[in-house]
Image: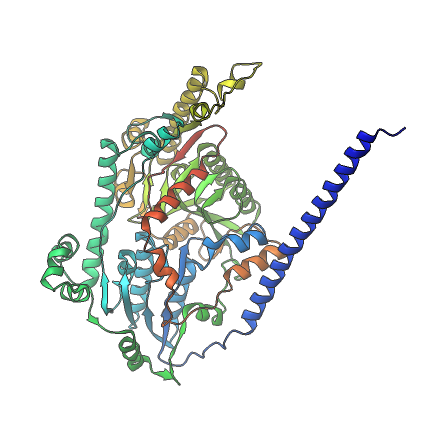
Length: 622
């Protein structure tokens, strides 16, 4: 006889299961329909794009990007990621912009570059200088660079200062506010939430943990940070002064006494900027457009020229790696973002698992004779950093030299992975060093206690509950983590001493978490040469005894689906010089919100189960 209770349960289970399947089917249908609509829209946009302009003699190359510069664009992990990764909209690889300038320098049809960088994000001092140096090389061929701004940030202006002439809108301004700024400290907030952050550290200057343990900057951290920003600021201001043909004292007056200069000009920002020699003239956009037209002429009602992205497509420029591979290859592997063991797609995470696989690809590929490690990372997991370093060492032992090239930041774990390279190149304003280790373990026992939740349980060994985040961290667990941090620090010191040919005492003297500019790092022996990525590639080729070579980006292999998503993500029709986005203006209105978001996003790097990190949390893109 059937039990009615059992029958009722089966009926209920069948009902919920059926509706669960229906809801899942509906959800999948909506998501798939959304993807098909997105695909149809993207294809339609590509086919309906206006025809590419012809490049006539005496043409201009227009560089007015709207987006964010990155070292390398990473593909979405799946199409849902493609839709919701709004932060990746308009990503521009730095090498694409540089390559367009290099091609134009050799193109007799291009005689002028017209530069407007107001809407370009992701610019740092080192990227601005890289762009500026390419602009200077363009000018050295006898060609002209004209720059225009409505209201420029200091890094946008740093790149523009390399132009022959810089013009400003009559209601615009350029503010050279300096480097540094406020950091956020969370000790009081964590106390109010009754969250205890257990901090384990080595080194007087390892300030990465201070935001979680203090409400203000420690004096040692203040001294270290002040030294860093003063050194980099000196480099930037001297560069701008030299570019503009003014003295460093005149530029210092503009940066330090802007209020007095503004008062003398009756509050007119543009006049203040012009009177200080920062720009060459004031023009409306229409006037500047006519000024450019007098030089390059017109095609009907359009200026005689082409956008740099269209120009790359017309020149057949393609990602590095599609060139003729008959010659030996020097590979370039980019490490971008916080270093973690494994991560999905995104420009802010460097997955050790993925990077190790790519290094093995280089090792197994007979065409690749040397590797350049391009680092733009504040570090992250100490263990993940070691995994990458070990694989690079295996590559060297296989007879393939490794040269490190530092971008904006190569600190903590970012320096760890490069410490044993055959040569280290840094840019003058790179932020590096931060040789130190720390541990962070949050504990929520007091938070739970405040709302009446208690933790209790059993354990077959002390650590089963001793490492809990919902009950008190045991003394044994604290000792274990502290010992691990101290051991990791000693390992860091040893590998730097071995890789750099320094004594442990000499490394210790510049370690303890202190950060250095590229120039300072060269003086103390942490880097070999101040030079660009191209210089590092040439050095790698020299170490591999190559007289000729091709350069190729080392990227993870992509299946057809990933290739389509990558193309969709980057299928943004370039906008003309006259077009501006209100979104880019809005993003500048809430700088504190962006800083808070950046601080909170860095917390995602705290995912190492060993709780030991080589991470420079307080390193900013300078």
